[in-house]
Image (tube, rainbow, N blue to C red; front, side, top):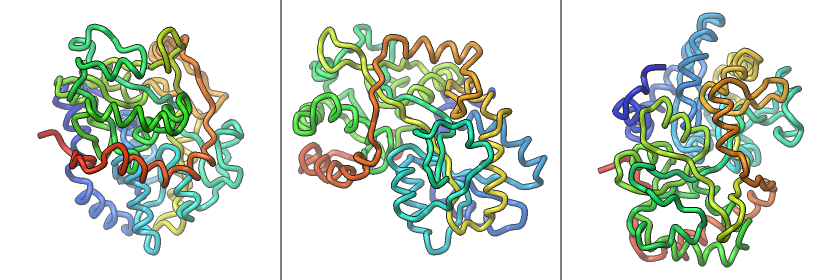
Length: 361
């Protein structure tokens, strides 16, 4: 996994999907229709795992896996645009976008034999999706720059962070929508949007996806960003980036709080190579692959695979003392459109602030 042993390598890894998504998508579309290939649309953050496990699948099955990586909402939007002529076979993305894909009829129910050890709460009853890699929503800082780690949401309003905050667009990124989910859960909807409006005074911009915010943190272009625990820990350990995941409390003296934000996997309906797509899902949910999930600081989606090893211990340490709250994803789906519209009107307003930044200047 030495492709990410330097900041430059990590930077390239994250910029590629942002700068060349269209080219990648076009290439993947052409390959999808070629014999012996399968196309995976995936949210960013799992690149190291794919690099580690997919070569064995390709060798065993005699198929090439073509990967298109983007923000979790963006990959679903792409699949939706292509709904009448799908170009991908497998989708991996975050809530609530996996539920959006299901409700939009993008997913083909498939009860993989390897879903049996995924808890009922972590998969769709009809087999449309299941948790692939469990994860937690987090924020992140550059510890070399931020000496007094923020403890609460109110701390982010301090003048020290003016122009140094960034988070991803809730319309296109699961981690961005997670900002709204957590703040509304802790503050109530109206107070949450009042808070986000105040926070906007310190926001530099908003990004289309979450992936390269870690790079901007490491380069000290911003001081605080949103993210997720798996990606942040992986980027710090394997990407050579200077960042530290943190969890915030609702108020001073309160307990830091977050919720699970898993990568979920599903079979795309009428994909060009469904049989290979099913085999890819079976493989990624296999014991062999799931046992490697802790290597990239993820939590196995299967309960019969332990969160073990040095990196598994790091995950346990990171979430020690953090309160986990449940999320009703059906309610989130019901609110998602209104929240997105309200964020654009009340938080962004007429400021003209960029909300779909795709590469650092």
